[in-house]
Amino acid sequence: MKPAPFTYHRARSAEDAVERLAAGDGMARLLAGGQSLVPMLNLRLAPAADLVDIGAIESFRRHEELPGALRIGACVTHGTIQRGEIPDPANGLMARVAAGIAYQAVRNRGTIGGSMALADPSADWVSLLVALDATVEWVGQQGAQQGPAAGFMLGAYTTRLDFSDVLTALVIPRLSSNARFGYYKICRKTGEFASSLAAVINDRQRRYSRVVLGATGGAPIILGETSLLLATAPRWNQAMPDEIIAAFNQDILHTGRDFSEVALSQHRASVVRAVKESLI
Ligand SMILES: Cc1cc2nc3c(=O)[nH]c(=O)nc-3n(C[C@H](O)[C@H](O)[C@H](O)COP(=O)(O)OP(=O)(O)OC[C@H]3O[C@@H](n4cnc5c(N)ncnc54)[C@H](O)[C@@H]3O)c2cc1C
Image (cartoon, rainbow, N blue to C red; front, top):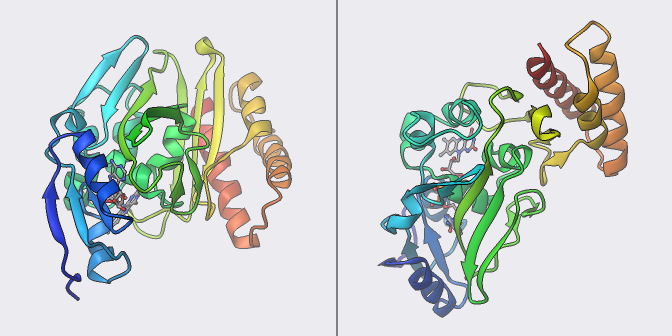
């Protein structure tokens, strides 16, 4: 199918994009890599009278070294991260995760900011950036704002962004050189959206340990008990799977969420495997 007619605008700056969104009265949409939006337009699932292309905004394609962190512009593509064309504050984990997103053509155009803004529950960055304790930066009619990646996504395809807000960058704390991590994504074919994923960061030098469960149908879940277990766990041993599963079960109980047996068994498996990777 072809999309319904729309007017195309090329934004010159973040402020210009905000103005155009605000003027669009809810019928204007940002276009970043277009890898999710264009199929939705073609299927007429996302009505848009105006498309505001942010791909040419120079600052959105840049990265910047900060003390202890890296700021990544919203329009940096998965492919740029995968190929190591910008520094990896997570010691190679971001490049590895980027390499598992879709296929090369999608990675060459799809952006980290577009992925966060879209907030597909099964996507990779929405969970990994929570695990890395990233900060999301955006600008809107109220000016510049920022907030932790944890809590940015409110539910499936819903974030803290208002209709005229533009996500500008992500700030990712740098892991210590001896930090350990694990990432496990369950999907039917390489590069597909996950049916379960777990992201684990164990940076004891920074006293930071976090286990995040993704692809839950809603926002990623920080597994508190499992994170505590990880923070004090010795190296991997035979008793660990049972201990992780006990902690995981407690965490799921606390969420009050209802998962099918199939989903639960996938989530258990991804968490155990990701924690194992971080401890061996
Ligand atoms: C076949 C296929 C397989 C895929 N597999 C995976 C996968 O395994 N894992 C995964 O994580 N993703 C996957 N994706 C999604 C892919 O990563 C998309 O690129 C990404 O979700 C959206 O990024 P984009 O830059 O293309 O955004 P667009 O499609 O341009 O925009 C998506 C939405 O976000 C909004 N938006 C974009 N940028 C901003 C911004 N800066 N501020 C505010 N709003 C903004 C747009 O208005 C639109 O509503 C897949 C996509 C395809 C087509």
